[in-house]
Length: 449
Image (cartoon, rainbow, N blue to C red):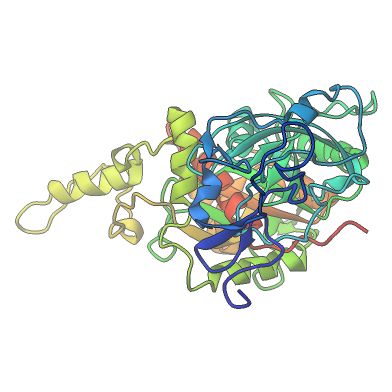
């Protein structure tokens, strides 16, 4: 257990794939006591189960086989009014299944009646590890320590789809115009918000985060999750659907605001200002993730499949819709015997001519450029990219990082050129959300003080 398990997980994890189930009420009355006495005696017992059973909706009563698709509320909990906080914490008679891989002790306990009031569990579903338990739990605003900001509703949908459980919404001050989604990811309490419809850029993002921080004072980290434009090159092998994560490089904190500075007499633009660095515990979490020898070969795939099962439009579009890869294939097929290639085909740059299609997203770490304009020019893209070694362009990070220590996660939906389209936006939003969930399974978010 010391090597592969955990005494504090619920259920207790004995080895890498075995858990020990026990009822939440082990000291109930014996059958020989009270009304309807029986000559039989009941004995408290532990049951060893495969750890994969945490994904299955099942109720383990004191007797008999597990019941699938049973309601997740006990008779006692049904008797509680939805409008009354009993102060008693969890009173379910069956065991509560959580992911045994989750590192516990990083957030409020699910049975801590002082940190929140529980309404009831209302339903459950399985979706390839995406939303295992649909709950209606009410926490205090002080209980949330991870904030996620999205620019577009399609990005926010992908983030909300990766919640392991959902929490009851709260009451906010009238001056707070944000709408929040509350839930849990790997035992971390998450608050997420989306920019107002039709508003984009650094100022709109900063405004959303300022209101979020005022309403949720114990936020330790903010993740900016969504889509962005990639910078293709043979060196970085960035393709549509890949994920770019902001990462400090040289004297940069991982994000640069490319349009903040001054123009000199010779028309030379000099960038000014520095943004906050991501929290140290998030960067060490990335180190832990990338050094994990037991990490799956395609660690985002299960989460992506779960999102696409519920929302098919978020599935992989196919590399034939990647204009760069499609152009390479067309150019290669049109080669003549003397090696001459047809001219006038988009994406014929020799730097990316050797790229091979991938059906699984690749994660890249490096600099992300943020500004208040959409980059749709290959010339502008390549000039800025060569000057600052940029991997991705987007429009909100600079505003967020001026207000809070932040990590930026972007799924690549286009190549920041004139061939922009919307085909890859949903899938790119899903890959960014899947990486955010993966990272939160490793990062050790500090407890609220």
